[in-house]
Amino acid sequence: MEQRKKGRKRLGNRKRNHNVMLRFNDREYEKLRSICESYHLDISQRGTISPLLRRLVLNGQLEEKDKLPNTSNLSYHLNRIGNNINQLVKLAHHKNLRSPNTSLENEIGKTNELLCSLIEIVGENK
Image (tube, rainbow, N blue to C red):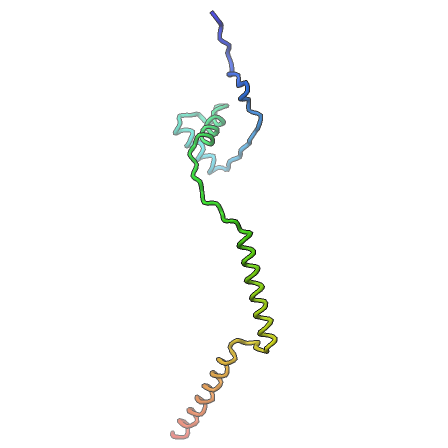
């Protein structure tokens, strides 16, 4: 009869060559502890967290989140809009339209003159 070898199983071609080290803050560590407890694992024992995390990462169903759209096209269009704004400002300065509210200011001035004359009329009648 063959005698079984004791110790860790040999991985052969499946040998793991890459290390990944994780650090957790207190809140994250407590969450990890609760996950380990749900699997009935003792977090203080050596060699329990690595297989758990490996199983969760490699076999877990991860949600695919919407990827961000390609922003190079967006930045191109933003630059074009900025260019158009600069052209409009240059044209406004060229035509001496420094304030787009000049007609509004004229109307306010006329209204103030009419109010002053109305006040004078009301003051004369008293």
